[in-house]
Amino acid sequence: MLNKIKKVATFILTLGLMISVITPNRVIASENQYEATSLKKYEDLRIIQSEELRTDAVNKFNSLFQNGKIEYSEEYFDFDNIKIAEMNGEVYATISKNDSVLSTVTIPLNTNENFYVENYFYEKDGNFWIKTKQDGEVISDVDSEIQFVNNDEILQGIRELNDYAIQSQQRGLNVSCFLAVSGAGATVSGLIAKVCGTPCVLAPPTCIVCLGGIVVVGGGSIAAAVWKCWE
Image (tube, rainbow, N blue to C red; front, side):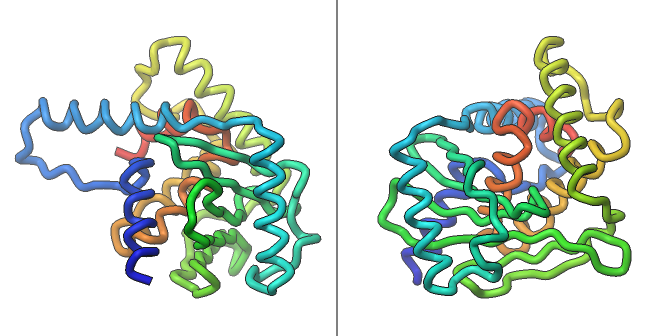
C-alpha cells in the first residue's frame, strides 16, 4: 500500500495537477517560474493513438468490470472512446460513462501498479456532486456548488472550451482567464477546477482524477489555458 501511495504521489507531481498555494511574500520571479513550469507540464500532456495500448486498456478495464471493482457495470461506459494520455513516459487510460462524459475511470498502462480511480459527477439537489473513489474506496463525495446541466450541455461546453483554447494559443495564450466563456463552457471549466482544487490540497492521492477530466476535455492545450483561470 505504501508503494502504491508513493506511486500515486509521483504521478501527481509529474503531471503538475496538484494546486499549490503561492504565498504573497514570494518574489515575482518565483511566481513566474512556477506558472511557466505548470503551463509547460500541462502542455506536455498529450493524447496518443495506439491500437496496442488501446487493446491493453480494454483488457485492463474489462478485468476491473468482470471482478466487480467498478461501481457501475461496463455497459454504462463508452469503450469506443477510450482516451490514452502520456506524460514524461507515464501512460494512462481513461474511459467515460455514456451518460456523463466527465465521469471517468482512470488506470495506469505502462507500470506494474494496478491502482484505479473512479470519478463520478451526478445530480443532487439541483447541483453537481462529485464522488471520488480510489481502488473502490470512497475518498470524497461533495457538493460542487455548481448548478447541474445535462450531458449534451457538457459536451457543448467542452467544444466551447476547446475552441477558446485554440484561439488563445493563436494569440500566444496571453489571456488571463476564460472570461469570454459562459454557459456550459464555464460549467465545465468550473467543475474541473473543483476536482483539481481543494480535493488535491486535502488528499493528494485523489488528484489522479484531474487526468481523467483534462483528457476528456481535450488534453494539454486546453489544460494550459484553463490553468490561467485556476491561479
